[in-house]
Image (cartoon, rainbow, N blue to C red; front, side, top):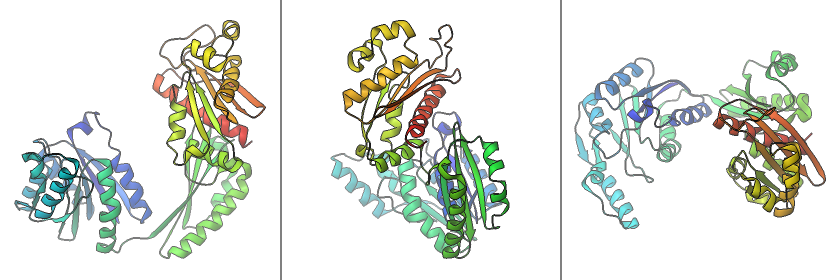
Length: 413
């Protein structure tokens, strides 16, 4: 079954807000064997919204819409859908009661615009929204289903998970079983890994295929199996995934789909180790990535963001003489930072960074994008000098990625 998404909002087309909803929806559809075949971004324009819907229904039987359901005048989706389906708005008493109860619980008073969130088109089936004021609207006509959902990601995700996908599965029987297995691989370039796995790929059954999803220094390999019988699909996938892991050996350092920070966390937990970070140029971004992982408190103790030299010397014990002789962006300095954060936070492992994120700050021999990085575990300590590009935000991300991978390399050689 093919599905299209229409995302509504001027803010999407001027770049003020990024459309993350469509990618999330695509992943959920894929899990039920359906395919997102198109995404259309539309301004808050009645004619453009109607035209996008008509054109999408010429291609697919299911259209999922996000956005345009707020209480302000620029949110015109409901009235536009009334025009398209030839119906009028009426007040849904259950939506009204739910919203009043929500506001009363918070001690707020509803204004007229918020009360009008209970207005819904006559032609739709109302799907109640327990996490927001705008209900989800389901239109089913001539074998075509349109679902209009709030653009707020948390509300949309709740609706899709708890209501929309179960209803679509019941409404359309055209779905297959799809299962994925993912591992993270280091020590290969993408092309070298493809050559290494040539025979494996050639021997895969037709129902299983392999995808390469590379990032600097690491490649995510995803095996996907499809079929009509769920048990058979799972069995076929497991057989091929076991073969893949046996081929890769220690190059496959994580056997699930997760972030580098998530992979590092699993290794730390398996080894019963703790970690702390001493960050200069990354400004706490490594700590941010680590703390995005649920359960990280089991191994992550904290960070010292030592952006200024005096913080490096006062809190981490970096010698002023080391900075004077080698420069703050040097292996000598980050090695002392790593040892310092081990002492200060009483952790087994440490990550330390000092670099030039840009766009200025370059010195002779150390251009923008230079990173000094050290990782330590117990008595073991390694440090490297790396170079990235000239864009500050991208450099911070690359520095963070490199630091996590370097720590993984130390713990999982």
